[in-house]
Length: 176
Length: 137
Image 1 (cartoon, each protein chain N blue to C red):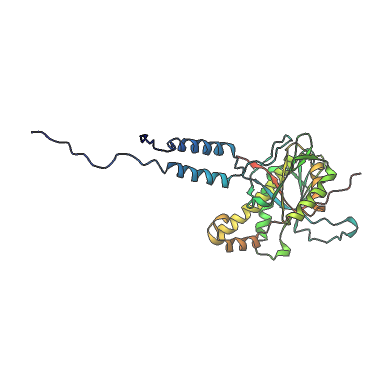
Image 2: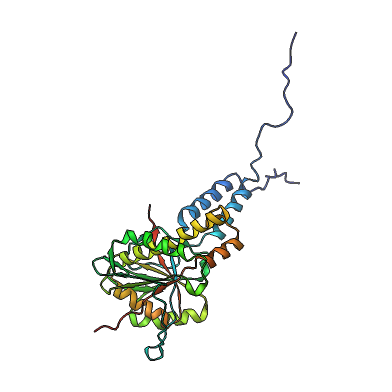
């Protein structure tokens, strides 16, 4: 006798697959953090041991010394100003030297006290960088009619030569 | 007279059989592009705000250094002492010659400590730094 068996169709139900995949997708969407790193970039000077240090005379006309003390007062070239004035004081100096060769460009030197709050240092550095960026924007608007970020990379290089960002961190003094 | 309704012979259904494939593709895309946070941050910090901030283009080059409110320094997964910063960072630089150190420092820390860390970084030849800051609106 032949057993008649009703064959069931062997299939995995796939209708809920999409739901499962969506759940997984949602999990990854929620669990991952795309934190974009933003900040103020800076290149530190190379470390030179004190006995090997050579003093190079820099034309005082080129140098803008920014000092921030522990109260957050700022001294630029011997004048007491507030942090938010730094930008407007530096920018005209940068613009005045756009056409000069690299060894005549402005050097901004930033120096702080050991007791200065970090936030104030960042604000000062921010102002200095803003001055450079705005100077670049102004020069590029004058030359190409566009802002710096809209220029081609070739033109950007040209602008970087015109307004190079030279920020020097003063060598910290020995603790007495 | 009896009118027969004319119906289109085609099925009125959206084919859903390929939906899982599409979703899986999306899933794979997100899995590949996003990175899970690798380290636990052990220090408490609030970043300063700035306007002239830039994005760091190459995420692979970044190495983090945290300084918390309580002036503790964290590199990788552990709290380190100030004297240890230099050897650790020197090791990192040997692995990754053009490393960018992202300094995530609390806004209330005083500059003495920051200067000491900077000196350590200079001695370790990690010269590219980035002071992490959020956008001031």
